[in-house]
Length: 314
Image 1: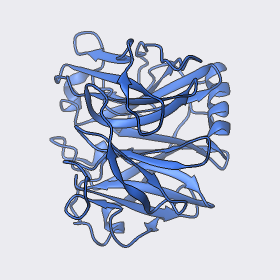
Image 2: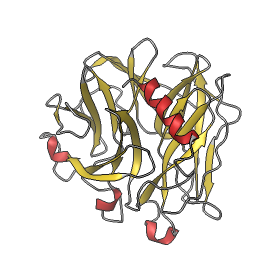
Image 3: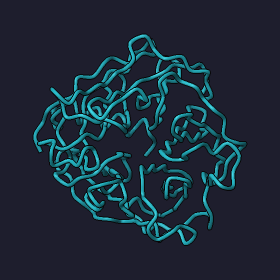
Image 4: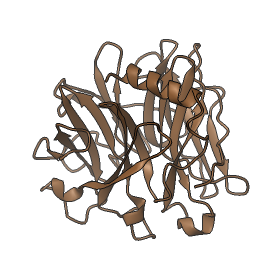
């Protein structure tokens, strides 16, 4: 199903009150949500925090959840790990994933070890996935302008059908993808939104391109999601006057919405993000996270309203 149909379905589900704002989808620790509507079912791909050491984000597998109503989620287990990529170290870190559907296939973009991004492909949303290239899509040691840390891939498919990949920390990158979804069309370019740290996610509203991202001006007690506006997918991007759009503080919230995804249907929009678990001391200072969802407003003038994080219990 195309993305707009996905978003329309999500809008109906949320409008009917099936999802409690701020409600974690599962008591299991997970982060970095990549949600999609495939084949009449929701699939949520995530970093598997419950499998890490509790001291760092060092899990070596990705987790999959699925649902028909976005209220009751099924844990489909660790469906993929880094050993799928024979060129990766077997103990390499498995970080924030992304998935895209095209050409009758499902493409899984996998940050591995903090310095490479691989692509796996499957004929079904849940897999089995196989290496789509035999080498990394992007490799810090091999490729020009890969950046200090090529992680956090996010695929954006524009209204003309052109696919783009955003990724990177400190200085975000963007590059066109060829129709095969596993080859770059050109080389990565820098984009320069103010205050950027990581986790780029592109949406389009009011004919403008809204690059959302996690704030670099943060401490372990606060985290912010900002956005910047551009006229093209390549920018230049200027931070919006009402940015940040989501902010948490340790003293009153569950801190750490450090990675997110935004979906919309007309005037109905929603943000999925991860946060530390309640109560906070068990969350390992943001190493163990939970995924939550809240309503958000994408306006017709190309701006995004601020979000008040919900406080649903696990």
